[in-house]
Length: 229
Image (cartoon, rainbow, N blue to C red):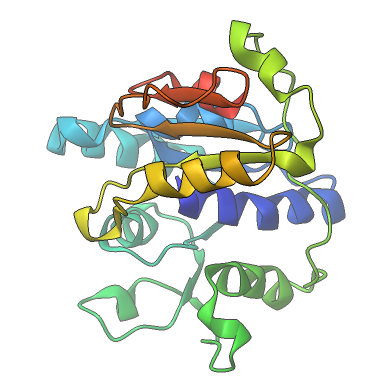
């Protein structure tokens, strides 16, 4: 999801500077609803990663039938590299890499960034825009379509600079940090005007002493549309 959000900022700038361009995004099904909230994405083609071979073959067939003008592989991972190579698109952009067969995947190269800025994934994604002759600077916020309303949304009606939205878990165990309850307690104690919202895939219990006026627990497997809202 983080890779999609980073890449979406770049694609929004592409759509602004290339108003006649139709952007189609290929994504794993759980993340497709998030992309459909973005008005600059014309179409989302989703696949179910857990269906494995059947879903992959159907996706490759659809990509080859569509005759796209170009494809950008902003992630450089094995699966999107395979989709890029087998898509049948003649103009295929990617970042040069020596891992596996990915060096054979692309027909156009985005040079790797070696300076300090290049360590951030946003800079790698923005390099695609620069190579296409578009503005490298990313200055606008990510635009989203209006979403459904939820009972908890009034919780966000206060000063947004005093709201802390905390994603409490990751799909990778080594990225999970166990001290969010303690951090939240310090934030709430420091200023009664601050509010903390937890969200994440794994359900966390709300500590009994957290005041309901300052704390909202949205952890658990909630629909992607709700997380976007």
